[in-house]
Image (tube, rainbow over the protein chains, first blue to last red):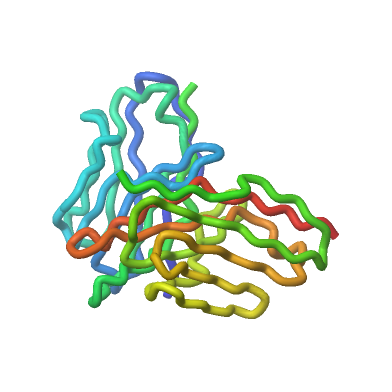
Length: 117
Length: 113
C-alpha cells in the first residue's frame, strides 16, 4: 500500500491560465474522489468516480472544471481560466466499495495547493 | 443540505489535560467518521462509528455516536503535543449515496508542552 499520491504538491499560476492536477489512487481501490479545502474549512466534495465512470459532480464544480479517470486508475482534474477564488487545497481520495451502507473510509492524498495570483 | 457543526472551532490546551470536541447535525447520517489532519497533509481516518449509541475507544481517544445518530463527540484523555492537528468529523449519506462524505469545518487543537 503506497497510499494516494498527488502531483504537483504546489502550483502557483496566474489568473486566466489552465492547470491540471494528477491523482494516483491506491491500486485496488475502485472509487476515487476529488475534494476542495480552503483555509478554515473542511473538505468540500467536488466529484466521484466508480472505476472510470464519473457518477456525481457537485454544483460547486463550474464548467471550468473537468475531471477524468480514463482507465479507472489515475485521475486528472483540470481547471480552465483560473480565478483567484480557485485558490485552495485540492484533495484526492480513494476507497473500496463497502457493503452494508456504512460508507467507505477515505484514504486521502496530501493534496495539491493551488495559488492563483 | 446536510450540515455538520463542530465545536469548538479552536482549542489550545496544556499537555496532560483532557478535552472533548463535538460534532452535531440536524440530519441523520448512515455513519460518522473522524479524521485528523496535520498541516500540509491530507486527512487521516481515525475511526468509523455506525450504530446509534456506539462508543469506540482508540488508546486515549473515545468516540461516541449519539442514540439519535445526530450528535457525536470525541474525547481525548491526557492530551499530548502529538495530538495537535485539525480534527474533522464527516457523515456518510444513506443508501445509494453512502460514498459521499459531508465534512464539518473542524476543530483545530493545539497541545502545548
